[in-house]
Image (cartoon, rainbow, N blue to C red; front, side, top):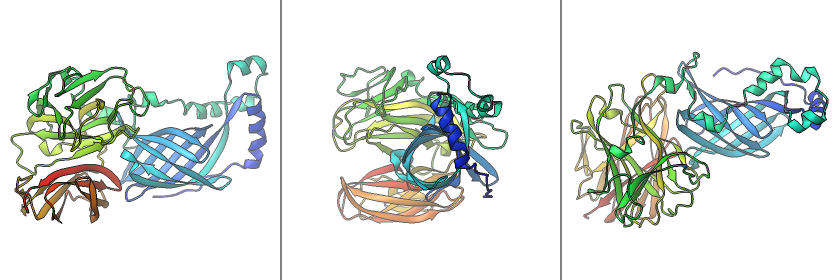
Length: 468
């Protein structure tokens, strides 16, 4: 990536002007920052920020081959703390948080965590490239103060301020990802195949195989699915209408919604959604969210991927699931929520704007598709996949999509609730789609693998060892 040096305004020259104008109630400083960022074990690029007070807006720019992928960012930078989100798609955001350390008058380093569950690490080396003055006129200031100097109200300064007026609330319906210099947006390039939230009343909702219907009764011990309007979620934010799905209150309960008659286009498809909990919902052990396809004509690997959301105060806004392996087929798309090995305590698990989207023409991000376990391998297939008599050595396969460079892969293994070790698998390389490995299992019972892709938690695989 080519770097360039940008002129920096003299701090001593501009500070008296800023102090004078700010004291009169007519202006605030707008700082421009340029950062070289590193999403450890992943992308690198440039972060361009405009900072007015504690508010920041800008772009995260990532070179991908000959393309330039841009993500809008927005958030807060107060003192030594920074928190912002980058937009991945029309309804998908990725949170960042971290600390800021000044290394000089106009330089700083940043470091922190990002992505779902803040499981990924990031850092940045930043330089302030410009400080300008923008009008900030309150009604009280306008009545009590003389007009400001014309020099502080020129068109250039006003234009700089206008770049800051995009709010968090407006971003979910506007342009978010640019993949070339023409500024084409993801919402213009992608088509919605199925709005799973809007079509929820037509889906078949079951507790295991007992039909519970829609909209369900929260008093039903078998569980329920329903809309919640004007929903406030665990992050304290209002999210409008959400789709609540609550399994029965017993161990290993699962609530399933099946959307039949869905055709996956030849260009593939991806499910995009937010997942989380209603405010004040009690979920000490979390809920497993899962998306899968049931397509009779598909004869490939039987993959699973369950995402454990723990109700930690952060809505996972960037959940996606690639279903492109079913391209050209017609079948059923499934949403499910499962309790795990402990009882469900209280309702509250929600899907936020789940939609099946065609990515045709849009940017494709490297992602974890799912995995499978079996007693052995036969070419590209698992023997005894998810079999009743898994024991001893277990074969594990992990499947990925759109891998454009080298990415790290780890698995954290658990027997019941107890961690039993972390395994660093070989890095997956550009163009590669599968990783195979053998796991030695010496205890009968419930096992799971927690998959860490590119430093970020992406899902669990749960299975039983039934014989030794």
